[in-house]
Image 1: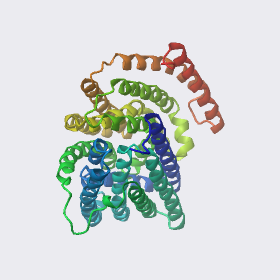
Image 2: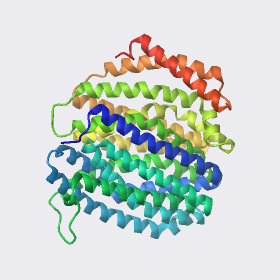
Image 3: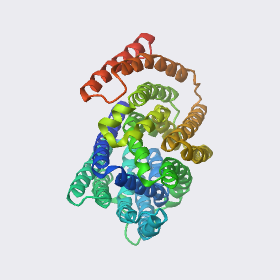
Image 4: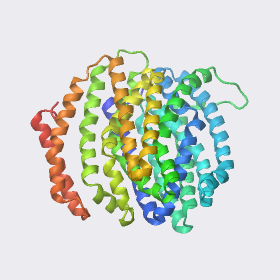
Length: 475
């Protein structure tokens, strides 16, 4: 199709989309964490975790399932428009129904946690759910059509809108509800922007006709979406259960010490998501599978995530001090403990999205359920004993199962050995040793920003030089 992007250009644009959104998200996280304090920020983090549990049922997996069918039919514009129109019908029904239910149950949920102030943010975030779902729906279509430039525009507009609205409302009104209202406004504007871009790309036929029935694709989309909904629901619970159990076992304020560093690690996942967004859609449609492209993608993600894991492990204290402030000392322990999670998160995006486009989502279900079960079990054992750090340990162990099992499944389907991936990982681990030594030499306590910049640059040069010596960088 005219205007589609190459793998390399698509990967760079996808990375830019994630990076721009990540910069805005990190800036907003730092602002809210400092402005609201650990107590109120913990309340906001708890509200976001509760809403995340509702997000997937409200979408019923439509935004995740639709891109697979669009990628298969991207050379047939009329069929793509019909698929999108039926998906919009399904999305509208689910989003409005669940948003209304969450708003109605906000009071009882707040009472269950003994935090009356939780009800207001939950109602605002229920409204944000609608815009969030439609933004995900349309950006999924853009990725499947190999138009990552549109994903960049939509995500950047939403992130900028959310940041400016949240900062303005918190400064004017203050409190958790104002922060939640800013998020609502940001997603509302982002959803409208994505709709306008989709209309420009696909034309009027993408909009469902009022009073008309479906165009025959709703059942097919819903069938695949149901499987993805089960998988992604389990994964979402895996991501949010830590905050809910921390609040139950300790306090809502303690949630901040776990959720804030988790949100900061999100920036480190963007290279993996960018590569996945460019490579995975090309696995759809029954074409001969390019195992070499997938293998090189896994190796590239490994080379990027090893230094990220070293940085967050060795410099957890200075990173938390610079970003979150002195009141988040416990968060440094959590960030340090999340090193294995950071190492694997890039590959997690690649293998999950690849299996979705390959049409093997059903085989992900037992893996996702096992991941959730391990996380809940370890959290229940460790949080009462060692607090929020126990939640990080549970996340690491469960996520290792999630990523490695799916990676093995991808390699089996594509017909590719794991030898090259293991060799790359070994070389990256060797290169990580001098990098870690330099970071330790600069210190692991509270460091000036300029010292961190100098140390980070020196450590990165050492890492790349070692990869060059081992031959991995050239390959």
